[in-house]
Image (cartoon, rainbow, N blue to C red; front, side, top):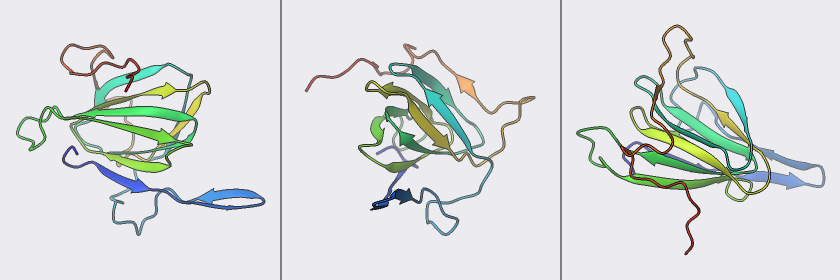
Length: 151
């Protein structure tokens, strides 16, 4: 696993009314600090990649649908430099994923329904100086192919 990534398995507390699922608590070992929270709706097949941050860690939870999240360690000097990790997140695998500063990351909604991704970044978004540095989704700099893999 890429250095700095943390996965927290989430638990749904279900009854006849539905379910309640805690995602991130201030007393979790994984919690660092709160910058803001936002939700992103994503249509099936849409790829939102690649980007990295110089200041913030991201904490992603997919609360509806399924996404394939990919993280690439492009941090020179990192013990896991060059490593790629895939995570399937959402209805069928409720997890919170900590994505560390400096790692390229992105995701693709998989399946036939839109997905809802919630992010708890550690910093506020600053539109005058965005902490977001991008590469194209099919960049040759990143050793990853977004196509479906058949096992």
